[in-house]
Image 1 (cartoon, helix red, strand yellow):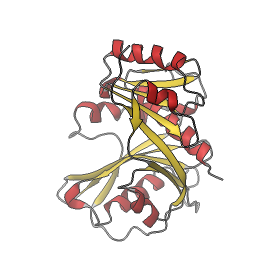
Image 2 (tube, helix red, strand yellow):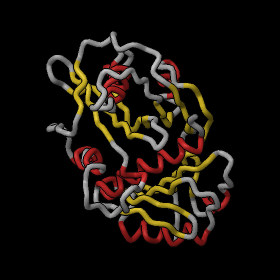
Image 3 (cartoon, helix red, strand yellow):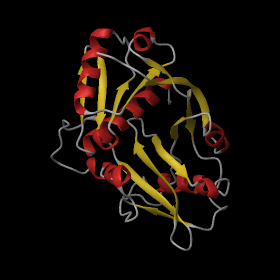
Length: 254
């Protein structure tokens, strides 16, 4: 059974995988777990149980040294965030956790879903982050064998019949067998046409067991939704698990 705790773990593993796959690092400071994602110049604090100045200030100083342009914190809704606010964090859009099997068939969109990391149009950070799909296959990584961030990751793009990319997304296999959906996006002019649902179906099928391709398995999907995407995930059958907090460092001085 998927819980908020397992959803938090899945999102943490995703940020850790992104960090390592793009040449960054993961580290801890006095009970705070961090992921440095250099291609986005982003430092991410992952669900601290007790965020205190002793753990926050050294990491923020390291973030400044690394050239961080954005510092985020993912926080359990019941956690005490007073120390985070004291050093300059404030709440961003509220996060809602959604989980469940897909409830809408893929029969509404005529384009194509393509799996893989061969996306010639991708540039900059978007191109660099495609490396996360290979991390779980690599033998030599900074992570120890069996680290939960080394779970299988797949990427999908949605293309029109003319070959134009109109959507994309990632899925990472969770420790409980769920598929955590990440960075799902559809072009503004192409929304409400079934493309997002088609991407969810494509990512779900990408995790089919190659030794039993005919096996009927309906994977449970897991997503951290923003207020603008919560309705989409609910419409596709994912039930609300609960809510969390996403905070951003607005100002900080050492």
